[in-house]
Image (cartoon, rainbow, N blue to C red; front, side):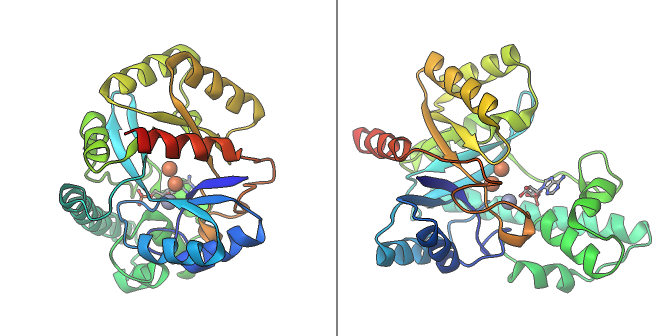
Length: 281
Ligand code: AMP
Ligand code: ZN
Ligand code: FE
Ligand code: FE
């Protein structure tokens, strides 16, 4: 079993890279990947810890990009973290987060829910990659809402009164950036796009023309039927398949490394195929 979609304290996960590796070792995983949002800063520690535990790894990133059907998440596997263009773009994306977060806090203030930025950063650990889950946790702390979920639904989801969008790359640009950094672009959790079969097929076919290499078939929010449908789509379009739990620790409850909510069993084979596609480059 493998888990190729994990978040650490370097973005909006609650576990350090080393803690993720310990959990993966406990779950008996053969391969893992750290896919933090907009940063590769946890990579070195993650790879070192995994090597120490004899677990195979691949570098990773997750970008939120602007597609024709709205925003979607693009994973990049096997990227070179020292790639200058990649780091320049990641730095701009993190800047876009900062200004977006300021707008959200301003809107919350206008709604009579003032939050100190420091209380948000306290949940993030540092102010490099601060996200809505951290703002949600601060809203809970302040007693404005009971749960992170309630914070999202009442204030932070798209359409809610404190929502504000942030800078995103276009899909073609994100795909090209990942490719240029030596990586393979993979569409994350396609089911969360909530598209019917035909429009999804059309979107993925277009992304493939732009250089998409694979799709995430197995995910905590994909049940067995969805995974089978995604596998079929990948087969039809000649795309690689990957999978991961999207573990965020306590910032996204009831998902465990390797097994997600309980049903995940992601085959080792997908990791081997991803690796060989990279070395075939
Ligand atoms: P951001 O990247 O800062 O815009 O925040 C996106 C993060 O918020 C992702 O990790 C999502 O998993 C999380 N998120 C988005 N919508 C919800 C929701 N309705 N409930 C809980 N978490 C959410
Ligand atoms: Zn996240
Ligand atoms: Fe995602
Ligand atoms: Fe994710």
